[in-house]
Length: 335
Image 1 (tube, one colour):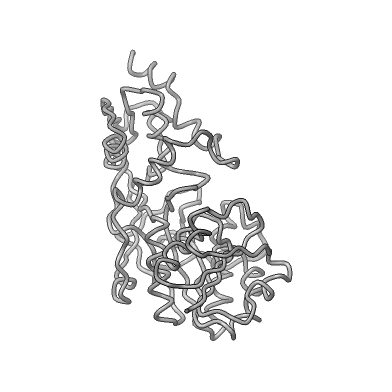
Image 2 (tube, one colour; image 1 turned 180 degrees about the vertical axis):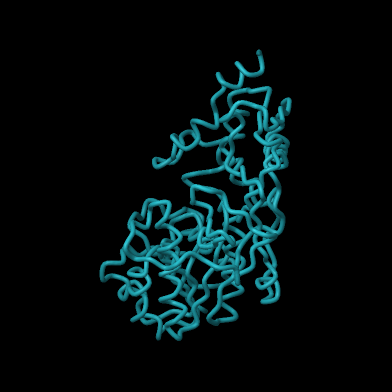
């Protein structure tokens, strides 16, 4: 039985990877700090939990080695260097990175003050931010730059490390569910949805289940490489609003704003014009087949959000508040 060790195994991507690998007959160890976050279904399927963090406890968590090591919590070059002494005992390593590393021709990225303008779907050969270790990795300028630095450490190691670059990750248990901007409207009985720029914005989604499917393929084909990881389709905000409403059996009037509408109205997480899409050719050539399209893979998250008695403890309310300003919307609609 092949063995997988998942660092951050109780997080969104880690849980999805554990479920996928367990279903395929793997022995799976999820490494984390809080056993209570280990899903019951993962335990029932045979998944094990090991309490550890990156401060000297990784070797014990890895034990005698693994066929697959997945690091969902590698944010800096220092984090990547923590892994290097372990990789000789690992058949295939996967680092979860981000599409935030990419820059356009002007050097803009998804967290820069000026929106990026990519010329079509982003290929893995697209230029990235310069690697940096001298800036906080949780800052707008530091997040992508630190990820690039971590990527470089691992890709230059000589070990079979695959870097995955997902986009807007969705799935059950996420602390920042983008779809909440529409689910909350349904729960509140809103009969109108207001969308900036006509709902044309596209920021391609990445289901945790689809990332897990690609991880399984990489485990079977070890090698040093970078792969994008996104859903097979890239619905715009209007299409996403319709998917959510249809799944929840809700009907509302669509108010599609143009450039003359007041600023701040109709905000949503996918408001990217020009659109941001990832080229998935390389993953498909490796044998990747997605678990499903956006509508199919987001359904479980929508059910979870509507059935939950409370939101995750680290739910980012401040992020969604400007997107759910019903008073401002009603003032505009009544004017």
